[in-house]
Image (tube, rainbow, N blue to C red; front, side):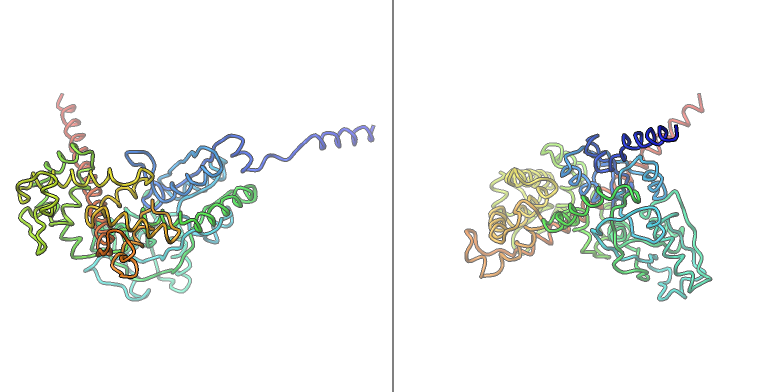
Length: 465
C-alpha cells in the first residue's frame, strides 16, 4: 500500500508543471498590462488618447512583443504596488526611483533615465541655503513616494526635520501649492520642476537633495525575470536607436530654455493682449485645421501679439510675414490683424503639407514651424545632412542638430540652397513649444473655471425649484 501511495504521488508530481512565466502569459493572452501614474512625466489622457513619455516607451515595448498595450493610470503612487502584487499589472512604468524599500517588493530593470531631486520654494519667501534653514518650515510631499523616503534618510542627521505626507496629490499640485503660498516647500524631480516653472515662474530650486537618481521600470519580484530581461534588451536597443532621445525631446525639449521675465510677460500678455485677437486665431485655426493655440504661440514668438510690429528686415504684422510671403498669399495689408493671422495660418498649413508623409507627430509640427521660420528648402538641406550622417531625417531631434550646420561653410557650400542661420529655427521651435504648452495649461484652467461656474449655477437653479 505504501508503495502504491508513493507511486501515485510520484505520478501526480510528474503530471504537474510549473505555471507559465509572466512573459509567456503576456504572449499567450496578447496583452501587456501596465500600471502607471497620471502625471505629465508618465502618462496623461489627451484628446487623441493616452500620451506621455512612459506611454510612448511601453507602447513601443508592447509593439516589439507583438501584443496589445493595456495601460492603467492611477492617481496616487501608493496604488502602484498593490496593482503589481495582485497580478492586475505585469509591470509598472511610472517614473519610479529605485529605492531600498521598493526593492523589497519589486525587481527593477535597466535605468533608462536619471533625474535630480530638488527642494522647491517660491521666490520672495526666503531661499533655504542649507538643510539647517529648512528646519521649522512647512514641507509637503507625496505619501509613499521616494521623496518621503529621502526625507526620512535626511532626518537621521537632522532629527528636527518635519514634513507632511499627502496621499491624494501629485507633484505638480504640490508645486502649485508652493506657488500659491499654501505650503512653503516641496520636493520634486527635475523633469517635473522644469515643466511647472513655465506655469509658475516664481518657483525656484533651493537645494539639490539628490543628483542622478536612477529611474526604471518595476516588475513583480521573483516571477517576472523573463519579462524584465526582454524589457532590458528593448531599452538598451531603444537607447542605441535614439528612441529614448526622441521621447525625451518630445516631452522635455522645450523645457531646456527658461526665461523668468519672458514667462511672466507672456502670462500677462495672455490676459491683456491676446483677447483682442483670440477670436481671429480661433477662426483661422478652425479654417486651416490647426490648433488655434499653436497659431497664437507663433504670433507671440513673432510679434508678442502686436499688430503694428515691424522688424528691420521688413517683416511685419502679428505673424511677421515677409513681402514675398504676403504676395504669395495674396495679402494687401500685412499690418491688418485679420489678414496677418489668417495669412499666417494658411502659410503654416502649407508648410505642414510639404513635410514628408513619413514624418509622424509631433515631429511634423516642429518641422513645419522650422520651415515657417527659415524656409522649407533649408529644411530639405538639413534633412540631407542628417542622411549623410546616418541619422533619421524624419525626427526633429536629429534635424535640430543638423540645422545649425547650415551656417558653416564646410556644409552649406555642399548643399543646394546654401547658407542659413540654422540655429535660429531651433530656438524658434523651442520657444513656440514653450508658449504653446503654457497656452494649453492656461486655457484648460480657464475651461475648468467655466465648468465649475456652470455646475454651481445649475445647482443653484435646482435648489430654487
